Amino acid sequence: MPNIKSLNPVKTWLITGCVMITVMVMIGGITRLTDSGLSITEWNVIKGTIPPLNEAQWEEAFDKYKQIPEYQLRHAHFTISDFKWIYFWEYIHRLWGRLMGFVFFIPFVIFWRKGYFDAKLKKRGIWILLGGGAVGSLGWFMVSSGLSENPDVSHYRLAIHLSAAFTLFCYVYWTYLIVKTRTKDLEPVDIFPISTKRILLLGFSLLGLQIIYGAFTAGLDAGTIYNTWPLMNGRIIPENVAPFDSFWQNFTDHKDGVQFIHRNLALIVAGITLFLAYKLKTQGISGRSWFWISIIVIAQVLLGIITLIDANSGDVSVFWGTLHQLGALLLLIQYLQVSFRMYAKPRISAHNRKVN
Image: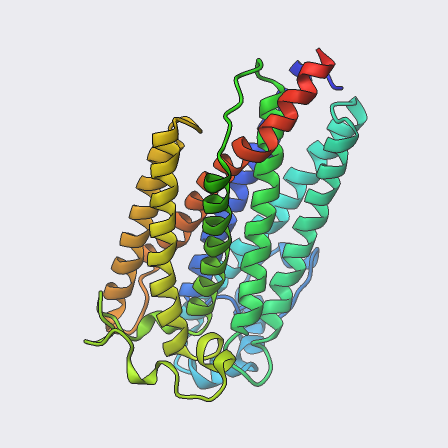
């Protein structure tokens, strides 16, 4: 087992990775909300690192953008200045991804050579690197869907890309918690009742589904309709929520149905989360997690409502939309922390006792 002091740089590396993924998710949200994602029509890992440096290069990049349906159907009025603005966000999005690759890969190699990893941490590090590469590849898989006939990227591919990024974050953060626990003195391990474990599992599962529906909502621009709350234009269930015979088409491929699921699933997730917080508090387990998970889920619901109502002009606010996406990640962190104390910490503590 590595020396405890040697794990401190590993902790810093992992938490830095978590912060960078968080920033990446926010930049991705801004890219989506500003319709910037299709501004760079090619994927060049090395060459694409350098942006256009003179007017001739800018005109060349703009000409390539003019060939895709998004420009022809929606942005034909764009000037070169308009193009530079959307190009900026997609360029930053890709550049940040490249920077993340260096931040994850170079320290990993150094820590490996210095023997900071045991077999399990080494394996987790390899999976982190592979996961980062997969997220980047899925980003291009998403972008490519909007470069041909359809001026929009596939909302299914958007959901896959976002889910992959959130999954990578979960894996990196969980690894951080493992390393953090190894470097601390042994603490009493909370005993979680079976009922509380079931509530946590249900809440976590529905939160994952809600994140997917958030991606569906963004990909379909479903947040720009029914901009009232708590009713959807005066009705609990609007007539146009399910106009098709296909359940799948109504609730995964149709704006009205997708928003209906997203806004009502949010209330279910919030209710289960608050009930979980109540159980944690009354059972005296998981420290102050009950407080933070309650505050964040309430704030996230309020942010969702504000984002929805503010979009009555036809556009989702970049500020509120990005903040709402960040709120989902913060709520996910709270669920990860409680899950770790419930499942992983007892095993790590038992392992440390054997080692000691």
